[in-house]
Length: 197
Length: 184
Image (cartoon, rainbow over all chains, first blue to last red; front, top):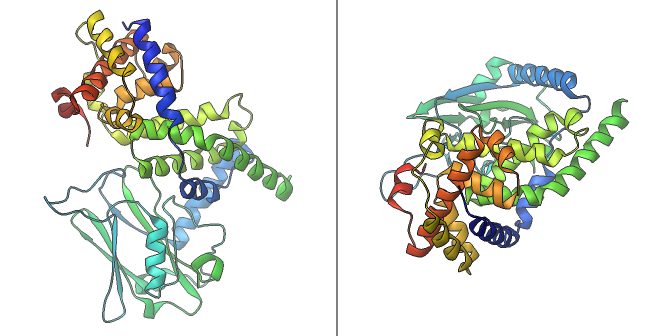
């Protein structure tokens, strides 16, 4: 059992420690600006939205699946720290993206755009509302724009910007917090609201 | 119906998220000790609440439902089902003296960041027991229901977790048992 005195002390110190936590404004902003798309009609609508999402995924995305627990932190060798993701631009114009953890989608999006790729990146499994899948999409096109392989446990995508049709951008939208890290990629219409620039 | 209703649901959800986000963030942060983890978990929590918003909006306490999702995500993320029994199972009897010592150590806390650090050194389920009981102020039976164990296990775990917390606070490092059982 636990004494009343100890319980009172615990309540007191937790009240102080909790009240002392301030939510960073940028975190609050990111959390509240995210498009969550609430389901209006509960289970039935939820089910149809889920079906729609699966259909969209099948149409626009190919998936690289790697057996890696979602919250898993990579075990770096002593003295080294693996970044959540890395982006490398090569001399031939291709860009290699390695994702190790689903962290900082905005940073990855910024980096890809800085490397000249119109991109939308989210780590919650959906396209942002401001984005629309590319109308002329087909599997052959996706395979020209993206190639992929695995390095150890991590999925590696190679983006070939030269194969991107005019007006198209890339979407990277793996679902967060799944037992298996699936990196879903697809093509979208490039626009200032969706892919920047 | 249609567009107007969807917009209303969206606004309703946004209002809910704005009102609930700070309390949920504090709970998540106390449970994880990591701002980025908390943000990720909270985003996933809101996403799941949004997917069920048609049902959740009619609940008496939607924030409690969101908190339950958050807790489950934290515990699942800790990925220690196999260690549950070790953390929450029957333990050696906690003595009155140990509780007194823990109460004294907690009374002396003046650096709240240090307290949160010490809290983060506990195994996740022990942390969950303390946060749910003494931050969220949930009754023992409700915490037991959330964590899937008996009420007596919750009280003994709380006592044991407080003793570990006190040890970490007074010695400046986790007890050897913490290091052995705490997930990475």
